[in-house]
Image (cartoon, rainbow, N blue to C red; front, side):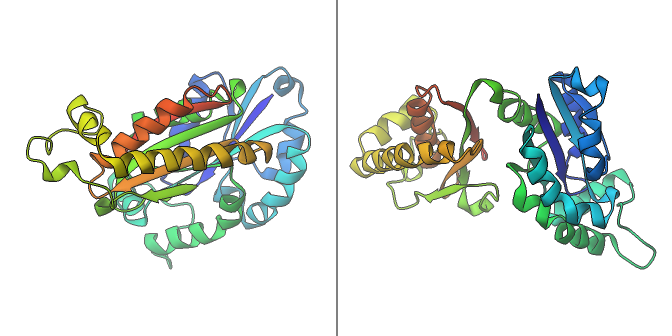
Length: 281
């Protein structure tokens, strides 16, 4: 039985995540107090299920949230459980609530929406620290989130590790869900070649140019050797998800090229499921 606990900040996409998992054959239960989870998993109906998804958030109460790490540790001794934590930039959450006109679960007549979001973020830190996979939905629409969940969560039965290679541009901010983050702005930049500026690191004309740059090839080889050495230790430590982010200035050329090369190399490793994300494309 594969159990996914879906949690995170209100407005970050928990409902969409549960809908996606339900479409993938998971039996979904929302807003369940964590102390009832063990009893639920012993019921006759649940025992017949191969895949379960359970939504848990601040609606279950402060006591439930505080006890989560202890309950989770006990449950992981009995079941295969992945905890998915969804979050987003505070300004994005404010905008989403403004657009939907929905009430935040921690809102009160004496507390603003911004204060409620800040309080929730603080309350959920113990759960976030224990999560197996974090997804920042700030720049995702519902379709991108669904795709991300399907590729990262729903393929895990066949692989030891879900490995996400992600390119980004530093000028747009660093991704908050990185396990390894590399800065390649020191490398030769195709942007300064007028004939290459409008192309990306996925296109042959840019790839051919970067293929000839010695520093780029040295960086590529160093990254491959680094990851080849350390990924097996993460697998040995029962790590199910790993995100490797590479950033250049705009996120269109050097980082894209290197992510594609890393993904191509590690695609041959049967122990990992490879996902490629180009944030700025």
